[in-house]
Length: 215
Length: 252
Image (cartoon, rainbow over all chains, first blue to last red; front, side):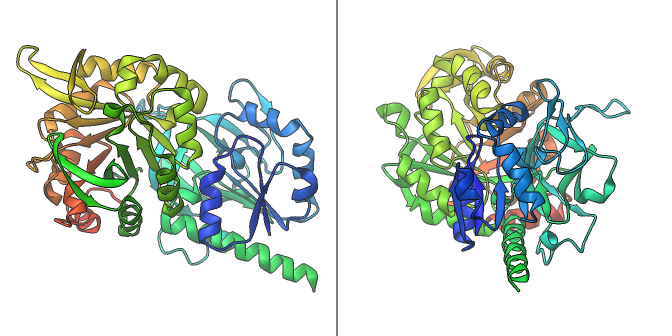
């Protein structure tokens, strides 16, 4: 059972619609006691990093998420929810994140080193370049096109957490993770076939892990 | 790199998909939920749902129908028609839309673009511009109310103003070409595309797969929209994409 964290910053409708269609067991809650019953967390998010951290801090949801993940339960962050997994963001002034993954969130510069300007946000369908084919989330994908909408992106010196990237003038981390911690910069719930397959893979991973732990 | 997007559009009136020629002579084209689902399966990159009765009859978008369509989609979904206030934007986004399209209300009250983009983010505010060539002006003029009312805005000025206020994308319809199936308006698309820094969706005039190639190759539009050629199966989204791929256009 996946617990979707409702902290007021979500594009919850479409995430729920997708999980429902895929018949993945899930529930939505803003309460830590209820989310504590989940086998894994899903952290959605649309909006600004600072507002999101502020909302998570309100009832100690930030601490709860970190403890839950440290206790071994998987998490999948989506879009802003993925960015929150990192150490800090420079959006609207430096803000600390959940620090579950190494790296920081910076704005897409909109200009390359050879002075080519490009549009920010990075919005539309782009191709994932899979860096770690063995990662459970990226198994058996029928296509690598996914839908992005974001103006900030992850910068990390630890390339080990880059499971897939995308080329948009910069190397944009697309799927990140380490161990049972995962994040997608794009919106799997809006990414048609590849997105549905990634969510399905996460659901299956949660189930496998759950059964493994029960044994 | 980003792909060029193909966007089918559902013009919805009284719960049915309809299609007119140059915004009049409206005929039935099917059930919105069924069409939405079919287009998603065929590889549409996005879907736009416009409640075309809304602006005229001052009726709000039918949220229930938006919810039903959203529940079947695994691609981005834009909803427009009769969205007049922040409250309207909120209820449409809550209903499952990813973006809203503002047209008449944005011209009447440009602050709605500013407020909407501040509150919900630029990425979910699409400004739809209906443009018709004006002999006296020697340029394109902006129309509102489903193309029935002319405004004082010249298209390029309005496009720039909308983007300055926070529009994240422009949906540019050539009223001269709408329903004519003679091809997108390349020149109009090009001047607007060159004037702004946000994506431009070309709309009006699609009659064949080659028309999509033309508009991408010659105007560098970011996306192209069509309705009736898809509704009436004159071509399919996959046929358009196959053609574009053959011509070397990057599509999903």
